[in-house]
Structure formats: C-alpha cells, structure tokens
Length: 162
Image (cartoon, rainbow, N blue to C red; front, side, top):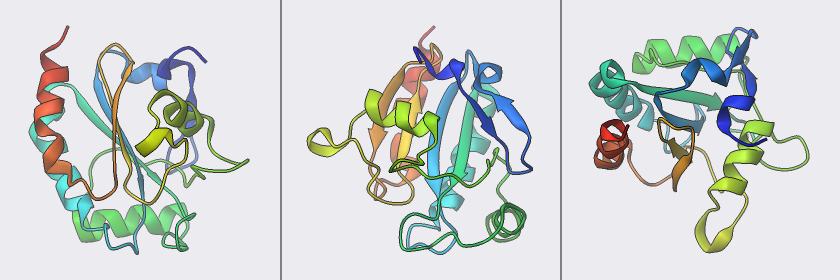
C-alpha cells in the first residue's frame, strides 16, 4: 500500500469504512484500551477532538486487547464504556491486533512508515498515537506516555499546511 487512503477498516459497529473518506484531514490513529493506566487519555483525546475537529482533525480509536488483556469487552461494551465514562464522540473502530501475524493491515503500514524508538516496528503498549497530515503521510509516532495535549502544536502545524 502506498498511502493510508488505500485501507479499509471496520467501525465499532462492524461496518466497512474506507480511509479515503478522511482524505484532506489531519488524522490521529490511536490504539486504545478500557482497563489501562492510560485509559484516562480518552478525556484528553476527546478534548483535542472538540478543539480541532472543526478545523479538520479526526481521531480514530482502535481498541486492542494485546497488552495485558486490558480491552476484554465486545465492541458494543467498548463503545458504551467510552461514551458513558469519557463522553467519547470521535470515531471508534472494531477491536484489532496491532502486533504479530494478525496485526491489522493499517497498523502494519503505520508501524513500517513511522518506526518507534530505536527503529522498533512494534507498538509497545496501549495509547500509541500516529499523527497523519492532510496529504495522508504519517508525520510522527508518539509513545503511550505522551499525553494527547502534547500533540496540539503538531496538530496545528499540520492543519496549517496545505
């Protein structure tokens, strides 16, 4: 695959979504979990979404149960949890694997395009964030411990780019 727009993913309701529908927007793709020490980042992600969505930011949350079994629920349970506890209104997608032989193709692409620390090709934990420019190019990967608010300047930079 040559860019992010070539992928299709399943939303939290199991419906196919073409990444093409996000062309021209700044994207943040993040693997999430409901029982993780980083789970409160949902609040920060939603704050970013509310601040920047009118200027073309989309946050795409992909639940993942590969790290400490911290996302054991069904897609329906995950959606209910996120809405009830954090008021999440950004798009959520079906639970995926981000590492190994069953890794979702989108995450395979993201990990190859934006390697982690010391060139690592794996996602190390929940709430790894990938920021993608309006042109569909992966701008940067952010470690799970980086709070969503720390991405504001990069989001603004990418939104200002044509």
